[in-house]
Length: 148
Image (cartoon, rainbow, N blue to C red; front, top):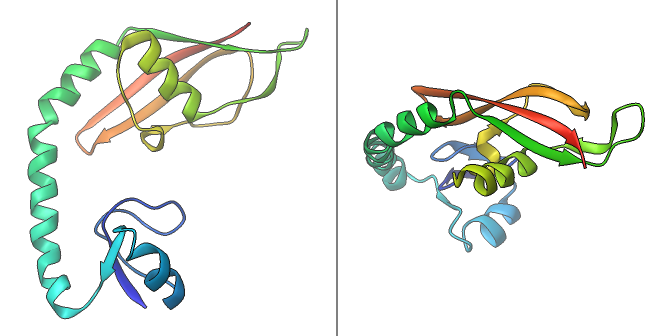
């Protein structure tokens, strides 16, 4: 069954992408929850209209994202983690923790899926994460993992 996704869905696809899913998953879960629509001829024609509206929204928010990039440019985020004596963290630092720390320390709300970590963080130290908020704006956030 081919469907058009109306939002980003992990392990399925991105917003406004046409994907194939099993019929039961599409019919019983994605479509009733408003996460997708059937990819018939009428909906495929409206897909360009949806994409144009989304591009217009992103264009409006471009200035906001550039301002956010300027705000976070030289800032260092501090994330506390429990660690052993050798500096190894119990567990790891995830994109959820970085999004929460951005909200707490700088009052910047970022969706967790927009935070991209280049590597697994399992040791205390200084790292860089990438925020993928807009195709034209790439924000690198420096953060330091310290022992609690």
